[in-house]
Image (cartoon, rainbow, N blue to C red; front, side):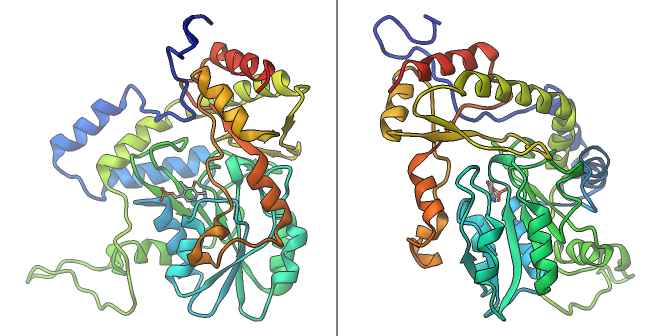
Length: 379
Ligand SMILES: *Cc1c(COP(=O)(O)O)cnc(C)c1O
């Protein structure tokens, strides 16, 4: 791979950790929308939603303008408000907890499985109080959480389950699609996620009444289908509660529809790259692979593992033009969320050793081999 690491030692090419996937048909599809000049929410949003349901198994998906909007709307429709508590893992992006704080509620942090970064159900029950309303499960890197155990706790204590599935479109848990299992599942279509609309997201609710609420609230709390425009030129409605402007637009949906083409093939390719990484790194001293169970299929947004001497590792890869990253540390460290919790011992250890190497649709098997070889040379 002399073309990747030049003779002088300075990397000639950088292998990024993420890419933004834009399907070849996207330009034409988006151009068509621009030509019609119908840009806002219309029939393409409907078509995108129908295809998310039929191709990815999402239950009643409402297309929204971001994953953060999906999380916020889930919290709103779940009825979570001032003084309430939501139990979640800190191993996520701040958006998961911001949505809770936005409604005046408090994120309460449980610990994670050191082996994969997901919430450890054994640490949930001790954090339940009379104010607990929901458990939020974040599928770190796309690997589904222990949903059966989480649902059993939720059922026992009368709690709702919200999934932050920003990393997990196309993932399955015991054969069921992520997006069809819990009360609320939130997806992100942000630029570096698997399936992008530029920015965008989706909120899925198997319960039709919740789904109706999501569709109403995403557009100012006006029931669009049942608010005809009167003769004097305004829709007939009475605003009874707070609504949001969270819908997706048709030009973004056109990009999403284009990017759904070949989605499953790209997921298969990701799995192949992951297998190559796992085989290549299994017995490398200083590397500990994440542990995954056979009863669920990750969406593989990230390829993560644990390393000793992480900063040296990052520098050694950077010297060869390979980007590696922690992506996110435990979010509890933020002042807004109360500051770092030392009692979350596995999260603290995870913060010190987790690392992610490039995994995306444009990555080649030769590049993966080069990353593996570079790691094998030590750091
Ligand atoms: C990307 C991401 C979000 C936010 O999604 P946006 O579409 O950027 O608003 C939320 N949670 C997690 C875990 C994410 O990675």
